[in-house]
Length: 458
Image (cartoon, rainbow, N blue to C red; front, top):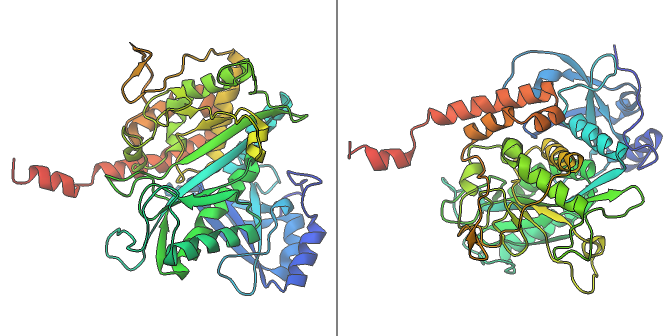
């Protein structure tokens, strides 16, 4: 049995199936890697010989559907991977000869999209926005750490400058160069890269692009960076908070909603923050649903150790411009815009996500929350530029706090009908089951801190 043939998601964009086969053969590729994300966003792969690629592009490839369920493996099910020709690439960071690469949709044996496929979740929410005349564009900023791979514990790099925008040297500079070069070869465009605040911490910035393309890029970017770091005797980690007293790794996401003709609906030059009424409603929707989507954007137990005061991470539902602890920041537009991002106009920078998230689910929740703000015509409250002190203009403002733990975030997610509807019941159930296991395992742990604080005292 094989699923029925369906049209690719981006008809007319990217290579056609026959071009994929021809380029793969001409390149000397031996295998094609069929990639998909499990419920947590972890990249999974099935490899086929290139001689089978033509048939698989037409009919799909069978696989065990329980692989997409993350750690909550409850049932076996027959599913098919349907490669998206528009995602075709010939490069892998560490493989010679090259291996063809395609990202896949997951379909049932009768050819219907599988309700538990997180890529399909994002496509569905994007399609709903498109029906309303909007395209959703995002530009993620991905932070990560590099550690010595041979250390018994997480250690710092001795040759790293440890400063914001510091110029790396030695291994770290070589790894940064190799990362950007490899990602570009894989078809993942990089706008810029730089050193972050903490020792061994770096950031890779992707350009503004449709949300599905960005999610595809993020899903393959993380394992590629890990593989490249290993070549230099280093370990790359996207863990949100590896050190208690150092800045964590976030994934700030710049967002723009455009009409089909390209007009930025967030933009209003007459407003002090450059925000139109639609931009304010979109931001208000995300602030309103921030607690509900927190488990998706900050999905690890460790994520909530990043979301604390003092490290430019959000802790409550606020917005502003200068305040880098705000949940949503509205960057100021330059007087003379030069870069592509500047030319777009007003954008909303959501600072809640971290790089451990499943990007498909994160962007789907973010878009659904923003659209709910548009649909309901929500009003955006006053900005807060000094949230860590809780004051704005001498008067205290009250803002809704974010969940303080993964357990609390999961409880809040279950109560948010808008986010739950965006995910669909199948994905919501799979995600909750996987994360409930993670939370339960964490709660049973006895940490070194507890032993130090309590063993001799009580």
